Amino acid sequence: MCRRMHVPSPCKGKERPLTVHQLNELLLICSLVLLIAVAAVRISSRSGLPSLLLYLGIGVAIGQDGIGNVAFDNAELTQVIGYAALVVILAEGGLGTKWKEIKPALPAAAVLSTVGVAVSVGVTAAAAHYLVGLAWQQALIIGAVVSSTDAAAVFSVLRKVPLPSRVTGVLEAESGFNDAPVVILVVAFSTVGHVDAWYVLVGEIALELAIGAAVGLTVGFVGAYGLRHVALPASGLYPIAVMAIAVVAYAAGAMTHGSGFLAVYLASMVLGNAKLPHAPANRGFAEGLGWIAQIGMFVLLGLLVTPHKLVGDFWPAIVIGLVLTVVARPLEVYLSLLPFRVPWQEQALMSWAGLRGAVPIILATIPMVSGIEGSERIFNIVFVLVVVYTLVQGPTLPWLAKALRLGDQGEASDLGVESAPLERLRGHLLSVAIPEGSKMHGVEVAELRLPAGAAVTLVVRDEKSFVPGPTTVLRRGDELLVVATDPVRDAAERRLRAVGQGGKLAGWLGTGGATAAGQPDHSQNLLRHPFRDRSRRTSG
Image 1 (cartoon, one colour):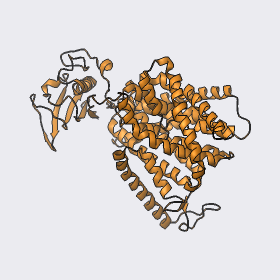
Image 2 (cartoon, one colour):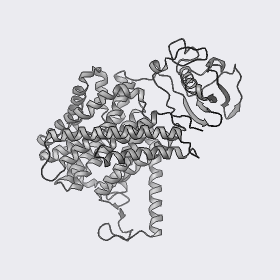
Image 3 (tube, rainbow, N blue to C red):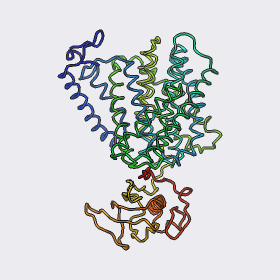
């Protein structure tokens, strides 16, 4: 990338290395763009607009037709950076995915990611050919490109909308799974010359998915085992190790001719649901990297587009997007979920929540790199389609969920818990944050009924700390330090969660949690939102 009239080295031809001054100038520009993008998150949260639109807007604003006048047309570099960013985004999404919520949704998500993709590609490609007049190759490429729901858009929007766990589970798993078959189809359709028969493509998709799943699960379980049993000298090394394991899963999956995207998502999901030390810090680090990846990817995609060239492809994009949103996506959801007897309200929401984002735009660079005729028009159509329909679907999703009575506003807020291993004491120090809406508010310390070997040792309230007594009443906003020996660490965690969800009578009212008195633990069956702590004692 180079700026017109400001960078001595040309955009094409023989390139010269950057000088120190040019490097400093580039770092300054990148830092300012990053700060502007971070500030845009606040605007996004207030307006309800998906943040990806603001990031794309930043890229367009500093691009060729914008105030920055930056000339950038390297589709190959954009594709490489986009793939790298997608790996980070899928890793962050997998780390935050709750296994108990997504497990019942796996069969439906798998069908949506395979059969549903085929339905969407066929319907959308037919519309692009017969209604817009594109050649069949271009139509098939567009149909495949826009059939992938975007993980970044889905994760960022859906986790702000209180939906039933089955709906969010299906949509999150679908967005993590459907990249693999779509990439295979786009690459196949972008081949110059002979294209393999459909049954060959189906076989390739099945094989790559199987290899990617095997690699991802293997790397995830091996990595989780290693992190639980190898004590690292500094807590800050755990997040780095977790992300490194996720990237290893992607690289291993891709190098074994499997789906690297599926591998990284599954490996991250295994790591996220394992009881790893410093789990909240791991997720926080991954979330920060995910934001950087999204910002960089969207801004770069905004730079790649030339706004004045979009005018001629505006209405074709609207027509194709309308068919995709109103016909292809609902038909895809209906046919895929027919065996699962999903209520029509949930089907309607899933149809509208098939959000597109950066992934289709990144995939649209594949035919550009391959030199397919009309590839620039394909990119422009996909860009306009993603921007317009994300602008329509994202902000209206909470309204639709409320209209369909699928909101889940009444669910008790979950506790925030972080665990640090106490190796020499063979125990754990649990840090528990009581959020708004938690039913632990008003409960006395003695009424927690923690198992023998666990105790509340400190309470932080209004920036002051004190040692609680048995009759100390807990309040919203309190932070507790709980020390638990290794044998009762999991039971103490379940009990704290049970009280947070069901109050002081959790053990008798059906909310799970082992108690000191030997009450049965039903938390695995009745607890709707399981603990998101992933910590585990490392070996001493």
